[in-house]
Length: 611
Image (cartoon, rainbow, N blue to C red):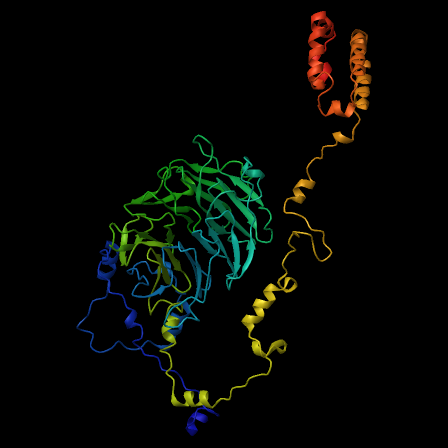
C-alpha cells in the first residue's frame, strides 16, 4: 500500500553511505612473478564449453518443475568439490600494517578473524582490530610482555577470549582479549637435575599450543628438554611433564616446536637433535609412542609442526630449508620432501590451507635487499602451484578459514594482509567499507565554538586544599623536606643526641656488638683451681702428675705478685713474664726427667701449662 501511494515508510529516512565500487582497486597487487599453472589447471581451462553458432539468442528459460527439481537436488557449496577449477587464492589485494620496527616473529588471529595479535624482536606485542582501525592501520594496544626478550609464539584459545604469549623467558603469560594480563605461570628450580621434580620450565620457552577440545588445557615446550601440560587455572604447577630424552651424550635436547592433533589424542614435539616424537595423551609419557631419529638435520631448529585435518598427516618446517610431510600410519620416512626454501629465522612456519589441499610457507630472500616469496605448494607432491613476491623475507604466515585472508609477518616489521574482494569476508575489507573520513563542516566548527566551557570550582589542582597563593612545585619541595609527608626513615643520631634520642657515633653499633674482654674482672686463682680440679679428675693420669702439681703450686706461691698482674703478663720479681718463667721451669723439669713422666701419662708439657 505504501509503495502504491509513493512513499516507503514513516519518519525521517537515514542517509545510506554510498561506497565507491572501485574502492578496492588502490590496494590491488601487481603480480609479476607467479609460477606457471599445473597441468590440472590447464585441463580445467580446456574443459570450458565451446561456442555453438547454431544456438542463436539466449537459451530458453527452464520450466517451473525443472527449477524446483534443481533446487531440491542442489548440494551446499564445498571447497573440496571444486577440484576441477583452477585454485583461487585470496592474493589479489593487500594492505600493510606498519608499527613494528623489527622482524615479526609471532602472529595469531582470533577464531572470528576480527583481531590480530603480533609479537616481534622489538620486544613488543600489539593488538590490531579490523573493526576499529581506520585508514591509518594502527594497533589499539602495545605493550612489552617480558621486558627485553623476543616474542617466540602467540596462540589464541578456541573461544577467542584469551591468548598465550611465549617469550624468551621461562614463564608463559596469559592475557585476555583486550590485552590485560591474567596469569603468569611459575618457573622451575634450575638447580634440580630431574626435570620431573620441577614445578615449571627452567630454560627459555619456544612454542605453545591449546588443546583442541579442552579450553582449560595447553602445552608449552622449552629448551630444558621438556613439554609441560598446564591447567589454565593452576599457575603454580603444571599438570604433567613430558621429558624428552635424546640419544646424544647428555640425554637432553631442545624442544623447538610442539602441537596437538585435531582430535587431541596426540602430542607432537620436534627437537634440535633432529628427532620427531609423538605421545598419546592417554599414556604415561614415559617414552614416546612414535619416534623418528634424523627427521631434520641435526642442529637446526624446526619452526613449526602441524597436524592435518584428516589426522593422518603431519607437516614440519625445518631450519634445514625443507618442508616434509609424514604419515602417522607409516612413521618411518617422509612421504614427500620439498627443499630449497631458504630459512633465515628459526620461527619460520608452514600451514595447511583451509581446504587441506595446499601448503603455504615462506622462502627467505637469497641476498640482501632482494624480495622474499610466499610459496603455495600442492599437498600431495609439494610442487609449487604459485609463488608470490613480498617486500622482504616472510617469517610467519596464517590463512584464516572464516574470512579467507592470508596474514604474513615480514622481516622488516610489516604485517601484510592479503585478501580478495570477491572471496574474502570482512577482515581487511572493513577498512575500506567505512569510506574516507568525513571532512569538518562549518556547522561543526560553529557548534564547537558556541558550546560553553564549564569549569567546576575546586576541580583544578591549583584550587585544592586551599593553597591558592602557592604553586604545586613549591609545595612539593616543602613536602619533600617534611619527614612525615615524605615518609623518610629515621637516620642514626650523631653527636650528643637530640629529641630524646641518645647520640652515638657512626661505628658505635658495631663496637657494641663486639665481644668484650672480661679478663680484668676474673680471678686467676679461680681459673687455676678449676684447672687443677680438671686434671685431678683424669683417673690414671692423676697419680702420675700429682708430684708435678706440687711443684706447680710451690712455684706459684713463691711469686709474691698479685695474681691479676700475673694473668695480664706483667713482669714479676724475676724480671720475666709469668709464661716465660713457666717455660724456664718446664725446661728445668725436663732436665730432671719430669717431662718424660708427663709424656708417659699422655700429656705434653705445653698442654699441661697452657691448656
